[in-house]
Length: 507
Image (cartoon, rainbow, N blue to C red; front, side, top):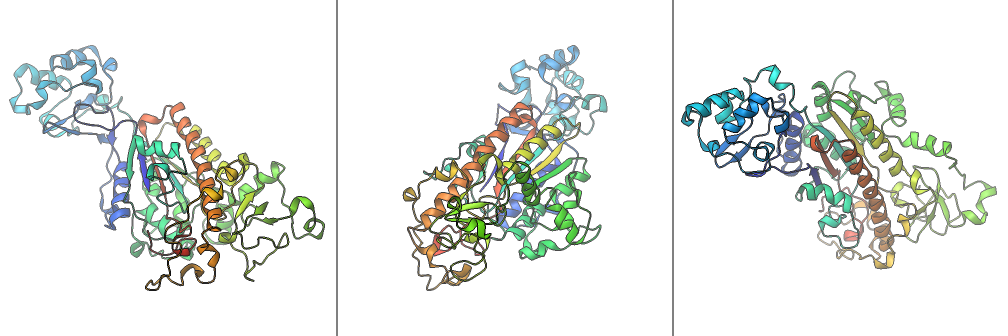
């Protein structure tokens, strides 16, 4: 599941003026080739300065020479007269009409008067026949659009079919769908690894796990002082003059984080990891935020709280450290509030948590991360250089504890268990994966409905914020010159084959 969004897609006879092939477009194309096919081509690509977008029309390469970035009404009088003599009108120049008949001629075939007009526009044989603008003077380049911005939105653990654009008839995601509808939907984009750290490292670098060496989440904690063996695309963009900022879940090698302009962590060791949690990843910062907004920590294990009516049926979230009301799939459902161990006698982990959070909807981790991303958009839009902004949502990764009103938006009784939930997996190497035999509740067709409902609720909340982000992009006038990518690092079993989580190579 991966989307990119541009306002208009160039087509023969109707192309968008001023789009330019830039380093980031080269990088993202390489990333998706690498991501879907495993071909390691990312670092082999040449990073160049912005060049014009050239569209293939009737076998001819077309551009406006050194005035590629100018609208018709911005052209100097003499230039407009030359363009008119070549057969251009406002509609044809700005990309809303058919191209002039002279476009079909090669340079040496042009009538003398037409060639003189083309030269006035700054054309040479190279630019007319091949779209090569290397001969343009700096004076003519001053009005060209700057390199495009990049907004990269990533969710964690979102299945490809958890979108209405992918055919889901229960979960409606109009805002995320809009990105695909206005751009490209990469329907066969496969994760390099169904584990957060390795998958994210591959996305950030465009390299397979064989090359990154990050084969598990532990591999992301490696730090090499002042050295990045495989640069991320944001490191490359930073070196190209981009402003780069990151907000949300990181889970990639820490040394790759040092190039971001909003990094507050010093390089190296546990101190960097701790401060990183108070910077871009925002998990620790979110706890501070909740305290400031009078949503305090509650010790449910305190004897004064255990028997309070308002905490009956409650347990404590692991990340947010705030109460949530459990549902029948939760591993501590029916147990004493504040229990540290689950019903199986194991220490509680994030995948064990299912229910309704008590955190108000405007103060959830998703809301907090999205709001910081919007603030960054506003700030970056005022700078005089292009930017790359990465916004990484923690959800719909566990814990599956959405807040109201999303928590009640999907009735568990309306959910459909996956067809493979009762698969005995007799001939599968994954028969014992993800504690499958120890957690039969995830093969229970009725209990799994609670997980599906909560999962959809978390995604619906993200879709709400994606809508706000798209509106902000439009409001700031960034739409025409910003590439937007939406993707997830990997999927979630969600009861398929009677399992939860990821970790295995099932689609």
